[in-house]
Image (cartoon, rainbow, N blue to C red; front, side, top):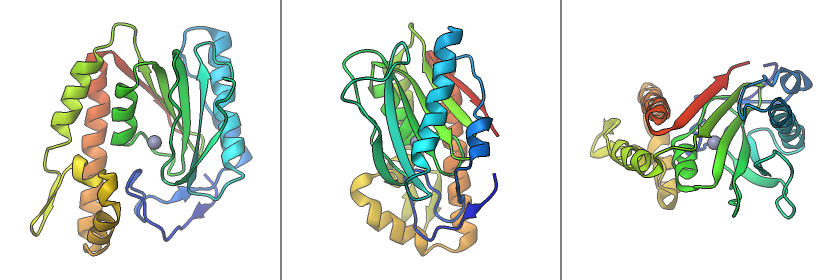
Amino acid sequence: METLDKSEKNSIIDYKDGIVDSVKITNQAMMNVPDLIITGSPEKDLRHRNASRELLRNAKTIPTGHEMSIIYDADMRRIKGHGYIKGNEGSVNIDDYTEPYHAFHNHPSDKSFSFPDIRGMVLRKNMLSLTAQGNGGSKYVMLRRKNCDSDGYYLYLCKKSKETLYSSGATNFTLDYIHDKNREVEIKTLIALLPDSDKEALYSAVRKITDECIAEGGKYGFEYLFKTA
Ligand SMILES: [Zn+2]
């Protein structure tokens, strides 16, 4: 972690919003991408690490804070017709595929998964793994085990998304509300009006419940691996 880009713009999806700054991608961060045992095959795991580095190399060419994604097949080979996708600040679309595949996207905050990341993965039954590759070199991976219970985990996530995290005036913040794409502007405005201490309390509540959701995945066959830089 060398330079912090103090971005003014907000993002609900990965909830940087001035609380967590975007990290500028450096060559050092690319070198720091850790080796993780993901597929169990040393060759494929090496390709997995290289894919993380390649993603950072590409994401370095777009503005700091913006995200990029790419998918690979089950053997960790590039898929014809599925190249890098450029996203926006704090969010990006990830391709779906008709065969089992591994998905990657970068996280400018260098922090772990957002709730929409996890929910999106559970819904896409062919997604073998989802990687959030931190701009600073931290790597977060969610693995879908063969015997996983996607429906059970999805139901659990739906229940968690309705829990009140934080109340401000008449507004009850839930994960569903925070991540409602149709109300992005309305929610950003509302959050922007909160005193700084309330903003921080809200963001830490979002991180806490999201981390609970990630940890609970283990019970349903969704294994979480990570190594921070
Ligand atoms: Zn993400």
